[in-house]
Length: 280
Length: 87
Image (cartoon, rainbow over the protein chains, first blue to last red):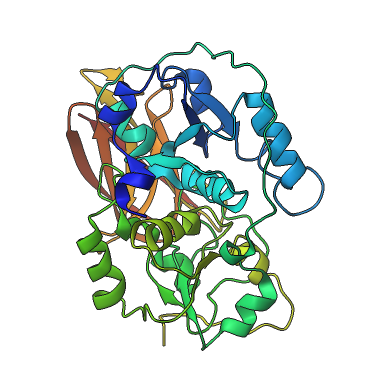
């Protein structure tokens, strides 16, 4: 897999706006952003209402994913192009779902909504009507998802990459700086984790850095051992999906998992080790 | 300076262009080392808000046309630090 298989630029999207086999999907942290304007023809996924289980703490199951995509008019053979705000945090999170459930052709729009907007490209408010499909998902690919016991067992053995900001890693903040700090769990990080903030992988305009720059960042500067398996985590699993995308999809590392339970789970577990301050 | 909850160090403000609110843009928060911490789209009124920690921060506004503007601000617990940016 190469960069062009998983990442497209805005010019590519503009050239394929009317291609019936290409479906644009917007996923935002701010779930009202789509309603204010979106790329023509794009459908919306609401990361909270559509992608989470309404009762249990888990995300949408296979059947729910099939229903969701069928209802949005997305077929198994469609090329899905995801984009969103905040440098594609939630678009990368949704991308990870599409891979987990076996979608064949899925890509991210490099730079996401921000770059598109800042380049003053066309935005519309009209919501497209797509005929219903009968989407068939596969079982979740467990090689892409880490659960808590596996994370605890990985301490000191595998690469653990904490992609949150340095203040969240050291325990000064419990949440990103633009969100209220109201959570009750403990602060800090998983012992032996390296802090490589997701944002280091992105340019100011939200595009991903080059493969060479990314290798330098993760291997040379942060000292990540690419011969080991890797688990990435953040607070709720969306920023770490961005880093999972970089490591697994762009750099082609074969064994990288996203721990979507992330700090909101780990930092609330009883009896697990936590470190404060800088990485040791 | 208006109060904030005691455990919160709020940084908030508005962005204007030629005197009118700029809604088609982004506000980004950088720490004192210049590293990215958070980014939000501007509201309809050009507004933005961050929940930070005490210290010195830079707010960088990204506006259409490749325009950006930086402003430094000092935040403290229980305070709302106001930043007005024109681009």
